[in-house]
Image (cartoon, rainbow, N blue to C red; front, side, top):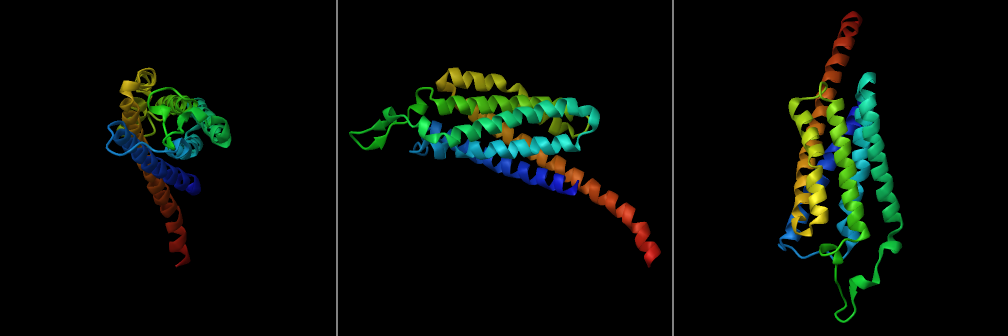
Length: 219
């Protein structure tokens, strides 16, 4: 159990860092504070790394949850599994997503249509957001009595932000809304890290209370 808690805590911490960095970078790209990336796959790499981290989080929460709550946690990690498989399939089929029309042969530069038109990678990105958001919404119901109020509220809020993802997909001018979703998602994973820390402390106290009588007998 200790290993499961430790794995969940580390995965949620990693997911928090990735989500914050990715969200801030997208805001900076949107407002042209920093130049757009010249490689779509490096640009979407944080999302690819976020998928397995989120899957590990949901699996760890499922293991820690009481049996009666697994009717909620199983669909949650099922959606996370679909998301992770989708991301792996996309990145393993990288040559199939290279579109020659993205290249500007006169200047030798790269004209990224991702910022003005919908590409396959953008569709995968928003599909990943939808799957993770739906998963956190389900987890909110699973952990409503097992976690802190802030953890429950963050999970629920992240799930209720699905309209932001839909709006930013169909209306490119509101692309920054997806960055807001990422920032709030990072707060959710931060609260999940705190959840695992509390579980870890309780387990340590329980182990001490069990071992202390035996130490007294030995002495």
